[in-house]
Amino acid sequence: MIVGKTQPFGHLFKRWTLPYNWRTQQLTGFLLRFTRPRPAASFLARSFDYEGHLAWTLEVRSMAMNTEKRVMPGIAVAILTEDREQSVLLQSRVESTNLARTVLSHVGFPTGASDAVLRQLEDQRAEVVLVDIDPHNPTRAIRTIELIHANTPEVTIFAVGEMNAPANIVSAMRAGAREFLDHTASREALIEAFTRFSTTLSRSQRSSSKARVFTFLNAKGGAGATTAAVNTAVALQETHGRVVLVDFAPIGHAALQLNLRPQFTIIDALQNLHRMDGSLLDGLMTPYRNGLHLLAGAQQPHSGVPTGSELARLFDLLVGQYHFVVLDCSGRIDGTMQMICDLSNAVLMVTQTDVVSLWSAGRIHAFLQEGAGRDRLRIVLNRYKKIPGFTDEDVEKATNCKVLWKVPNNFQVIGPAIDKGSPVGSQGNHEIGRSYQGLAAELAGATTSSEGALSLLYQHDKGDSKNRGASPLVVSPVRAGQ
Image (cartoon, rainbow, N blue to C red):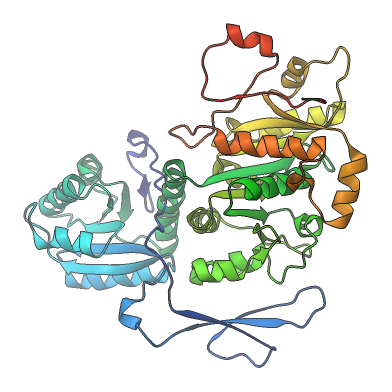
């Protein structure tokens, strides 16, 4: 993608959306300390007030020891140019984004595959390299892009040049550059480029890793998405371990269903992403008795909206720490929900078989048309009771979405379990508990496509299986007595 004041020849190029690789960005050597509020100091991060309790101050201090070995957060960026002043200018702009850090700044271009500069890119674990193109003599810079692309293909190349030189733009993109930035590109343009790099790489990382992301959302209010998310997460923890439940609802209720009182919420995590590492993330979690971790939802209504880069960064941290990430997006129908669905392996829309719920489910499916979340969307029928004359095909026709699972109707069991904060997902003595355990097993056992989606298919009738082609996973319905 070409980024700058103008975009000539923009129609010639495919939109490049490469995500961010945080695998080496471990912010080490930090001390968490909690104190009562006091006058602001230079090391004060942010104060949070939770439901009338004393406001605690989260302070993150860098320890003095081992500073030479500490890995700071951000995209590792290398700068190659033949102009020393331009090197200083580019480094300043990179650091100003707060998304990246300069690991190598070199004046001069490599001359061959054995050049020491290429080895330095690998030694410094550079993820993005900015190659400055002289508009009057672009040949050496273009050759450098070709060398880097051929010898270190894991490194993403951003070309930096003048937007009024279309021949240089075309040559740079053909040589292997993934972005073309204007020499005078603003801080915002760099942030957008780094965000595109971050977002897509995180998605491809999740596709190739074992960590899986499941998002639950409601067809309409009260359909039961929070209950489904909580019980599926509990069941996954019982059988597989290393599960985190993230409450992205506008007002979080997952903590209530687990009978937990969280000190920190998703808001705290999003506000501290610039200093986040595995240890700090773990400190924001609220543990449940079976080992499940909860990143609680907001305790009060709020107006904050996370950006795409913030969500990508948070997801990268979560999939690096856990085997399964379960998200509760009940109550959300907005851009945040769309981004979360795009970053998920499976999107499970919880609905019932009444007319209003099915009508709403169809509209939400249409709302997700623009992103990858549409193809990963499946229906979970909650409080299911078979209605004579109303088939699964009728549900799919009304919602334009495949039915994946059926949770039986048993309010006499689920109601008290919610009130007491004792999920049925860990209990095998009730049909509804076994249903959530079955859903968890099918999600965990499904195969993953190259794009990260799960191969989840629903078999309406066991007798039809003889007429169906082979599929990676066939999910059978859960009915009373099965």
